Image (cartoon, rainbow, N blue to C red):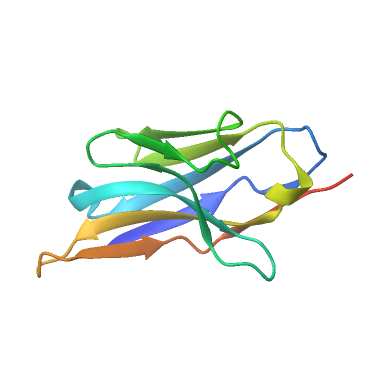
Length: 120
């Protein structure tokens, strides 16, 4: 199993920046891919950014050019640097990791979520 804990959320003004961090613990050697989702109030959870097991980076169109995902394999951490923030970026952000289980199927593990509010 894998455990994930986010930090770094809060209130920021439009145009500002914020950095989210996610500490990953447990069977980190079994991790396949990692990333961040977010869920705004009244909306479905959406993928924001991810890093595949092959090292491919993916960003949603809504954050491309403004957000940067990174992973420190030695420290078992993952960050999401968010810049030029907009009110529509307001959401609860969740880090996640996918791991192959003993049955060969991918399991997804989630952090508890952290609030990001972009408002003046």
